Image (cartoon, rainbow, N blue to C red; front, top):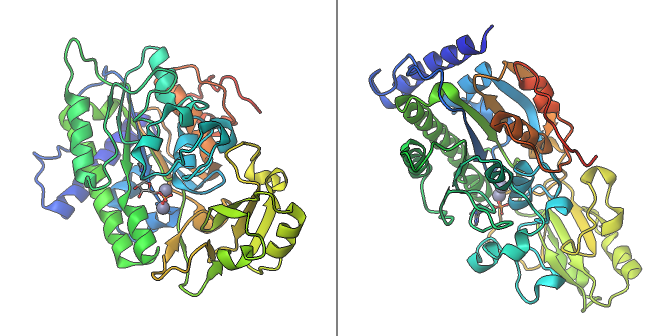
Length: 429
Ligand code: AMP
Ligand code: ZN
Ligand code: ZN
């Protein structure tokens, strides 16, 4: 089957579904894509925060299902360790593990960056270039090779990295709805003038499935409603691209950073109690994956005490299981603990439980994220589980750029492209 017919089939399927959801008429979402066969290629990376892979089968996401049928879809996109938002979003756009790109968790201390603590809610920290100095996101590599990027949110897009930033970007606004995010991006993508060329690469980021997953748990009606809203937003994006004549030359790479697990209220691990005999030690990371700065406490004694907790596995950072990758980085605390799936460590008694959490073992089925790739160069393919490090070289091939050094194997490039590209470039391993 040719890629064109696959795309056309998808568009027809989507059109029908759009009619059902919103009572739209064909004039709003025409069955035939606007002819733009010679259009400049556009690659859009869509980050679906916390969209566990099985959410696709729950019947709330007709657009995503149609895209998956017509394109490439994985049984799971396996996050890097730790399975939380910032490290994984940066791995998606660098093809490197956290110790390689430097964003090792959502919360970080760095002896080299003085007093500042990196936290997602601290805009001064998130926009401080010092935290990003070890990463080279794809929009930086692309800019050096003459490509233009528009990022409607992505970790790292709000700061100059190696002196470069996407042409279009916005400070992160959690309260902006998924529909507004789509409309804002469409505004950028369709604002094409002689002095403002069409973007080659764009990102879009949807947070609401993750937020509802945390607040209500992965099996809640609130998650299902969020899935439906995000799905409708993606349908609106496709409709806007079609109207602008961009859809037939667009690739969508839809990737979730991690999944979500149910954590019962009585499965909290008392991190403070565990450290009572060791006053100089403190938790820098808490949750399903936790990290401890020893201070001047004795490592062996602390590890022995932690070893008594039946729901935790703890290691000195140099000895974490190899499949989690190398954690040898000054921002990684001295001791790393991983809770059994369904358990979570906190350093204060939480008066309100968090029923949905992630950060667990990246190989656990609950942590597998969604991956769908769709576009004219993609053949319909069912893939097994794939590491999210593999997304980066695929993006590079679609953009026609030479990748920066990365840790991928080129699996998606080999398996998804109609004509396998030769570009995986310099790999570190
Ligand atoms: P978490 O579930 O703790 O791993 O992180 C998810 C949260 O990251 C989302 O709810 C967002 O509020 C936050 N987030 C995502 N992107 C950004 C960004 N660019 N800047 C600040 N916070 C962000
Ligand atoms: Zn996330
Ligand atoms: Zn989350």
